[in-house]
Amino acid sequence: MSESDVKEQSGTNFIHTICVDYIGIGTKYKVSGVEHDNDIDIKPDKNNYSQDLFKNSAYEMNEVNIKEESKVNEDPIKVQNVESKIEEQLGIYEEPITFTGENQCGNVFSIKSHFLNHSRIHSGEKPYKCSQCDKDFSFQSDFKIHLVTHTGEKPYQCSQCNKTFSRRCDLTRHLNTHCTGKKLYKCNQCDKDFSKNSNLINHVKTHTGEKPHQCNQCNKSFSQNINLKNHLRTHTGEKPYQCNQCNKTFSQSSNLTTHMRTHTGEKPYQCNQCDKVFLQKVNLLNHLRTHAGEKPYKCCHCDKAFTHKSNLINHAKISH
Image (cartoon, rainbow, N blue to C red):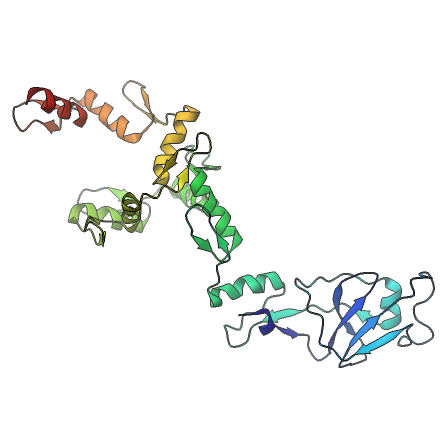
């Protein structure tokens, strides 16, 4: 939708664009008691600025030109107050302007920028483009939020558990898990419970083996669409997530987050048995097996078993 689709609605009185030289902008005003079909261009006497601009009548002006032209189209429309003397003489008062669109949804906006933003929903226009990954956005606010995914910045921290988030809305959603303390969605396979139904749906796929999202390059399939998107970058070589400390790039935002800890020294995963801390959750899980005595990686050539997969691989290379 173009700006020409904007209708100016002002009730029964006609709104005039009065261009006042010493203000320097077009301003929308209603002249009370008078209706005109043309713009009024007021040109004050610049040589004697203090003299009366208007004589006996409110409509007798120094140099008033009635122009047979279309209204000045200011973008954005700026409304400023004219000096009280002009207002008194002309009986001018400010009229709120509303904006709506032809043949669309009928929504009305009092601020033009809000109307223009809304119109992109109908037009599909996306003027904000990311230079890192070529994604584009209709709204600047969404674009700014997206940029954080490339830097790995997570400025919003939970005061309950210190978990951090890149978006305020994600933090708000997370805080609800602390407020309610309830996990209403329970898996009937393994008794795990979840605070959100979407998380339960994704979890159930681990039991059913359902992987509806398939790669068209190698036919590998995934349970979630986000995992497919991450996988596709292994084919394209795309690494849109860059470290702002050393410029190293990554194909997944989670890998960038983990990498950033090598700069900050953060080790958020702590063992509850011996207080050892780790950079990644997978390292903590591997470590916990040393306490449990669990050795899930068994050699297919002999009866030896190992706590870590890397140890099994080394064993196979040396012994077999």
